[in-house]
Amino acid sequence: MPFVTLREVLEDAQRNKYAVGAFNTNNMEIVQAIIEAAVEERAPVILQASQGALKYAGIDYIMGLVRAAEKNADVPIVMHLDHGTDFDQVMMCLRKGFTSVMIDGSKHPLEDNIAITRKVVEAAHPMGVTVEAELGRIGGTEDDIHVSESEAAFTVPEEAKTFIEQTNVDALAVAIGTAHGVYKGEPKLRFERLKRITELIDTPLVLHGASGVPEEAVRKAIDMGICKVNIDTNIRQAFTKALHEYVNDNPEVFDPRKILSPARSAMKEIVKEKIRLFGSSNRA
Ligand code: 13P
Image (cartoon, rainbow, N blue to C red; front, side, top):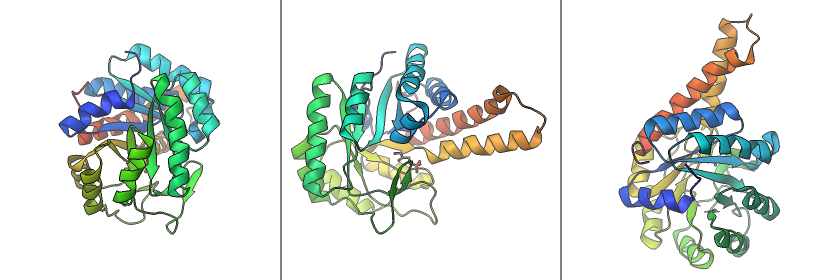
């Protein structure tokens, strides 16, 4: 099935109160795990590559892999750039066939975040590509982006209104208490803030750093208006755990295919679990 944009999948999610899973990918096994899970669950899915993924695999390899997925899968797939911070790199993604991009100007003051986001929207929309932006600063580490606890900042609802009016983005990542990476304690989501944001804007909202957030809290956030949920760390953990176990139990094996197969299956299982949690099964 040809790639679709964020807008195409999020409109239905927003109307029907579920979320579309956005899963980070870096290599063939991860792409296959995500796509097989989405196909088996009959779920629309967002494949996303961060700047770190593009640096690791190369944009042409990533696009080659996801185009193979596009040919073989009969569910809607969005090809999305996660946390782009560089305008030229975002333009490169547009040229290479991404159907959606995130421009993350969250480290800049509001006016500058608006300016760079608007510049990306003005380039992307005429090409039929959707844009996600971030307002407030989500803490933690996502590849090459590190935001310390003291730098993290919640999204200010009134600023979100201004931001949307001035940028016309298709989705907005909000900082409501989640962080990228592994949590030290249990994350506490600021639902009051989320509620206020949804009262002021009707743009689809995105929850980053969702690995390790209690299921109950994820469900509540989706009920309240989150319609894209990002997962990376849980996939990495599933991969690494299965790989360690296999290598420890089978130290004599040196065939990468044998070593990587259980890791791929473990990632597929976690993606399926998330798809069910987000309520996007049978929505394709
Ligand atoms: P986690 O690594 O915490 O799952 O977050 C993923 C994410 O938000 C990617 O943008």
